[in-house]
Structure formats: structure tokens, C-alpha cells
Amino acid sequence: MQNGPGLDGIVLPMLEAPAQLVAVDWAMAALERQRGLPERGIDLMPIIEIGRGLAACRELAAAASLGGRVRRLAFGAGEYPLDLGITWMRDEAELATARSEVVLASRCAGLEPPIDTVFPERSEASNPGTRHRPTR
Image 1 (cartoon, rainbow, N blue to C red):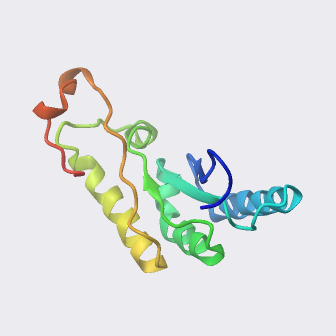
Image 2 (cartoon, rainbow, N blue to C red):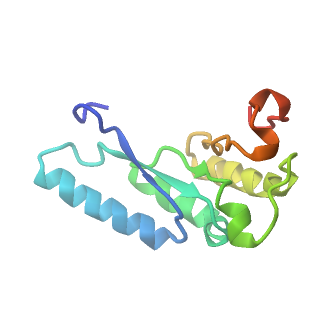
């Protein structure tokens, strides 16, 4: 990217619907024009991290692929179990379906492979070497 120092893209957390992505894309395009930046030069990376976002994941990926501003999605597991009222287990089995859906939606829309969640420091897993890391 040649957008100047320090800004290649913006992360969009808690995305729920394609209309949100379209609105942000529209606002970004207006700001880019106003500031003389290349249109669609600043990437957007939506994070799928709540149930509604996962339910709309394929539509989000399809909408994202149209404008070229979104190269990939991300999955955010930190909020996902909280939103659904489930427990984040040590083996992360409860996240497998969500991760797979984000991968499938990305592939079907022609996006780059998604980014997986950050590694949270939790009391039972404060040492990353002692925890199974399925996202590697």
C-alpha cells in the first residue's frame, strides 16, 4: 500500500450485516476522495466475532469481495462465546464450526484466507507452550 506512513487498513469489529460494510466502504471512499488518496487504497478487515456476524458470514464475504477494499475476513473468538453464552474450552472445540464457516465463506467469495483469533492469556493457559494451539 502507498497510503502514507502508518495506515494500510482499518479493522471493523463486531460486524453483523453487509449493510454495515457497505456504509463503511462508502464513508471511506468519500474520505479518500476528500483527502486526495487513491480510492479503495485503504483496506478494511471485518472481524466476525458475534453470532449475527457468523449467521451473515457468507453475505458479508460476498459483499466484501465486490469492491476490492476487503482482502480477507478475520475471526474473533474472544467475543463469540460470550455473545452465544457458551464456555470457551481449553481445546476450543466450540469454535471449530465458526472458524470453518469463516474459511468457507472467504473461499467462496474469492477472498484471501482469513485471519484467526488472537491468543488470549487466560488463567489456565498463561503459558502458550502448555496449551494446544489448533490455530497454528
